[in-house]
Image 1 (tube, rainbow, N blue to C red):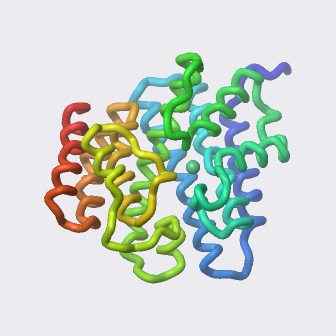
Image 2 (image 1 turned 120 degrees about the horizontal axis):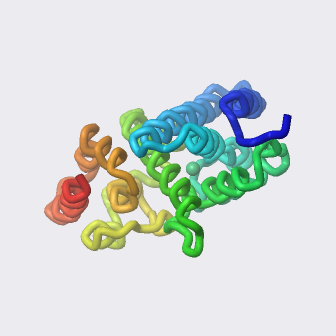
Length: 264
Ligand SMILES: [Fe+2]
């Protein structure tokens, strides 16, 4: 029978392939395996998040399968990145979206897809971590890029908040992107919060910058169901609690809080 669309079974097979692919990266180093496990868990939760958002947006069954495939593959490059560079910080290693696309091509992961599906998946993986949405893409492509960006952020916040209190161990450093935990923070991130724009990861100098940046991610959210999770899980307040207390920070963060309220 001629192939029409990607179906549930294709996705199931891809999940099996993914699990095998990841398992090849494990070594006898406990910390490294844990770091890989967290990314594997992240992938599974981003799959759940994207389906949750997609269902609330009344997407078709087929489009939900495409969306979940994007989520499954969006961070594929993380495993190679960690193996080669020992970090998840793209700024001091390589862009993990590009690494993932290279791996997908090398392993012919999308050979089961139709051309149109393949293009969507590749573009969504490619732009899942870019500072801005690309210009010149059609609405359908942008829709899937927006979905993965929202689904991904929800889980990055979760992982960050979970690992933050695991003080002074290797895990903490990995998920804090190996940034120095000093009391300073950079003005760019304060200004970005005030202007309600997203700052760039490349400007991060301290762990506080990363916290401010993550609060500013709310300005990049695309869908109301995602904003609702940010609100109900008190994401902004919980990250704010990890920052030094100052008038300047409280004031800057209040802009992000107002923005969330406005979006609901
Ligand atoms: Fe990613």
